[in-house]
Length: 99
Image 1 (cartoon, rainbow, N blue to C red):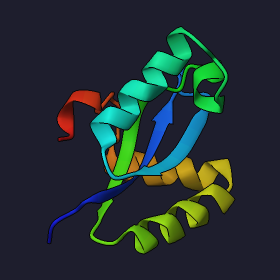
Image 2: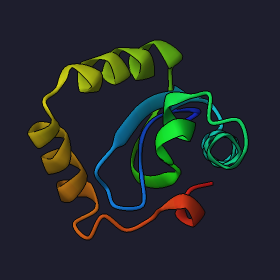
Image 3: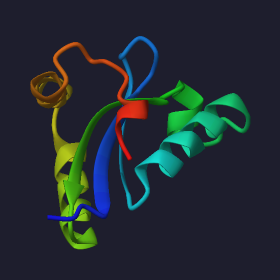
């Protein structure tokens, strides 16, 4: 299955703040978060330095990705932490591991 859309979670350096988003170009979107954090700081992710990709899911259709993003945003932090931990136990930065 081809994944053209992604739900992703980026965190700050200390993994205390999370941002959940959806995109069709994950590398470009991660670099936009980095740019925001270095310069404008107008976005939530930029303001809190959420530039470290710690989780992502691929989807074939944009509607499915958007539904999942909305679902994750409603979760309590503990449940989000568990999701990330199952996918990425060491909470490593995955920025360079996605295409």
